[in-house]
Each structure stands twice: as C-alpha cells, then as structure tokens.
Length: 136
Image: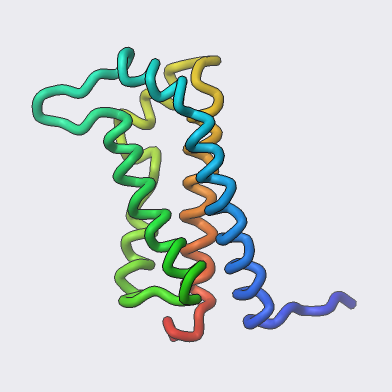
C-alpha cells in the first residue's frame, strides 16, 4: 500500500520546484547569449511580425511572470485567468518557434533546452494553480 501525498504537500513541492526552475532558467538564458546573437542574424524580424527572439521573449515574460508571483506570494491574482492563459499558451503554436525548433537540426542546443524548460515551467505553474485552494 502506498502513502498518498496531501494537496498541501503537492503545492509546497510544486512551489519549491517552480522557484528552483526560475533560478535555473535565469542561468540558462544567460548561457544562450551567443546562440541568440546567431539567431538574430539567421532569423531576422520582418516588417509586420515579431521576430523569433521577440516571440520567445514574450513567452518568457508571460510564463516567468506567473511563476514569479507564485514564488513570491504563493498565489496569483486572477488565478482563473492565469490558468486559461497558461492553457492557451503552447510554445509550439508559435509558428516561428515551431519551425526553428524542429528545422534547425543539431543547431542551437542551449536555446532549445531553454525552450523546453520554459514550457516545463508553464506546466508546473499550471499544475500549481489547479491544486491551489484559491482556485476552488
């Protein structure tokens, strides 16, 4: 017979994981500096659309913003809106990110790792919000 974990224990574990991942992502992003310079050259912005790096930056700000609120306060104002937004944000729904990720073969390993971890942070944040007593 296995022991079950309480909802409070799950949210504590998730909050700690979110905090740890936020710190990791800060370092990971700094480590992508050279790759970002190469990407800026290979994937320049068009006149009417965001560039690949701009789209990634928007995702980063949104996802890290929600996660940072959890890290600092243990909750998010307007949690139901945050849940909806995090469900609708699929990193690979952004065509430029999708094409870059799957068409650049063995290039840009650090930025691809960052993209995966950013999506993982999105999922952890979403799971935390679903378990949070404030969303019930």
